[in-house]
Image (cartoon, rainbow, N blue to C red):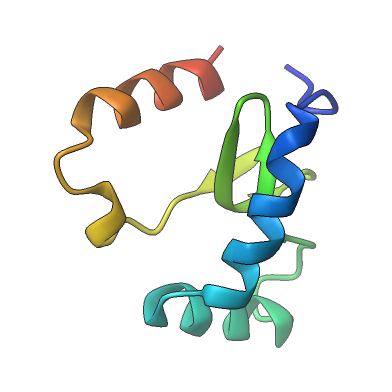
Length: 86
């Protein structure tokens, strides 16, 4: 699956989320930027109709750091996961 297409109206929201980062995301991002993993990651990347916390195109890997924003959103998270597993 290619994620080149995404809902273009998500781009401004993704920018906002990059500025707001929760602590766990900020700490993970610091590790990624320090080249600890050896791969290029995007932060708050629009993919399809969703914005993911981190995305590595080389590995086709989506990393979601669940925090309070994911509480009581199990159905939404399940739909999103099914979309990415296609």
